[in-house]
Length: 257
Image (spheres, helix red, strand yellow):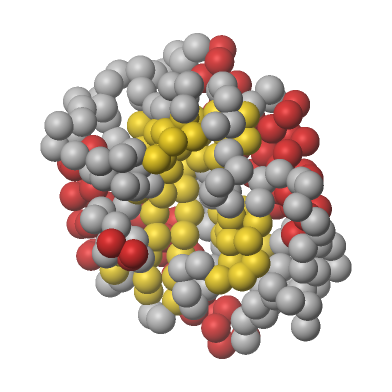
């Protein structure tokens, strides 16, 4: 087995598939509930309710010290935004929801960015549609016998086509029994081909793309929230994908995505 591969057993895949489905359902219900005027803490509390009702538990809460049930990142926040009673969601904001759930000894991890404005600007449409398209192009490249680098190349080409900056410090990853497993799945090329994709691997593909520069900064006060350095807005979409003998299986496929 090539370095960086993590091939799951059939029994593990049954549990991973179930955890991913639960997580996707929570993602969609949460996305549907977000409205202007809510605080990001309201969103986090709603996520806690949904996770509790599912019989699972948050995969993020207290993970390496993270204090929220889900990651809620608004506008120029790229990832790892922390809920606050003081942050009110505006009618023109975009909100990225990154949801991780532990269920039956397995993990689900998925993200979506939702727009509060029913008539967003052309740039915001380009950001959201371009990031979603980059995710789908990456998934199409996730085929048995190819390499992780083929996914990276597909994501990068789609991002460049949409004229979006590609965050490099944060990447996709393996997932399933643990939240972060090998291999890493960058959204850019130039780092090498990576391991060969084999049936039984489960990977999270998650482009994080910006309207402006690719450069980011981590909040010095909370140590978690990642923002674009130039203040441009950012989007984040993520699916869990099972590598099979034929087509890649999107484990977190639901209507929102």
